[in-house]
Image (cartoon, rainbow, N blue to C red; front, side, top):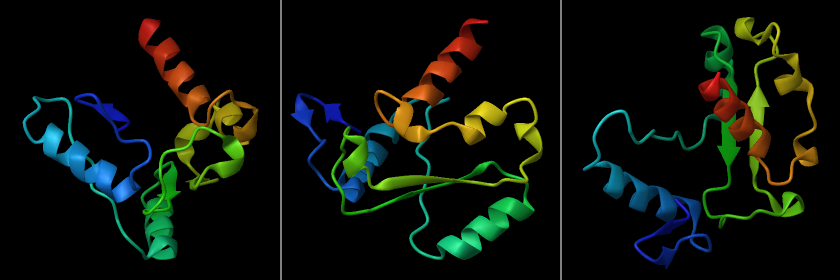
Length: 117
């Protein structure tokens, strides 16, 4: 959550932004749904993600504000190198995250392209 009801949430902690997002989505219709997070146990979680053949996890610093500058980013996308559905999509796994204009931008562009096809 970045901005809501004229309030700029970007300087607030991730946990505060998620709490506000949860509040807003509680009254939203499908298909919007709040996704819970897991605090701690990152290595065990990633091992389970790999066992389930999922793509990976995103680790974020819970007290961090939202930032757009790559060098100040506090989140990490940790990918399962054995993910079975990555065949033919290697560029998503091998690309340099820091070559994007804004972290996460590449994934958004690809998702929009997929929707328009």
